Image (cartoon, rainbow, N blue to C red; front, side, top):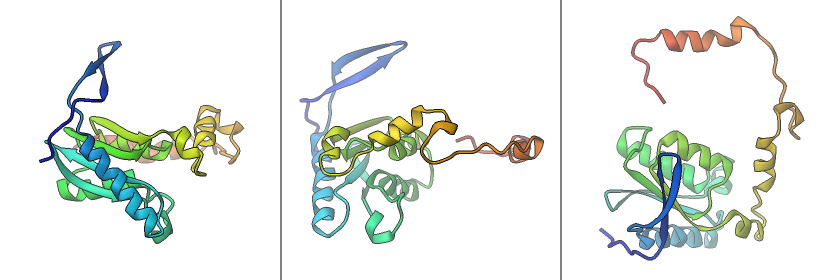
Length: 179
């Protein structure tokens, strides 16, 4: 187990308020994520790395594998989440934290929320990443727009009750597992 450092501040939510408090933050885990990112960039991959931690131990690691797999979803955070899911045998990860070499993009942020990770620590900001041609700002801008106003046309094809059939079947299942 890597001992925690107490330098960084952490923001805690209490009800409807936020307060800044000092909590143990293990910067060694962030250093590992950055080390993975550097190694991956040297090997020809994207310059991103992530580790998922539980109980002070690295549970899973991931690097950006977009180029090597031709998979645009194979970002470091998503790869780490996939690896942690295999280790845990579960897709919810309460009690786990993710340390990423860079602030997560919108897709990775969505994956982090779906995985129910407790906290995200990151190195470089999205603004800093944009200076190296990794600019996600347009995606954040697009998400804020109504679907019909986005650059990629998003067309709601009204299908009435038929479009809702998968959800009805889902809700009828007694053994469904909530996401």
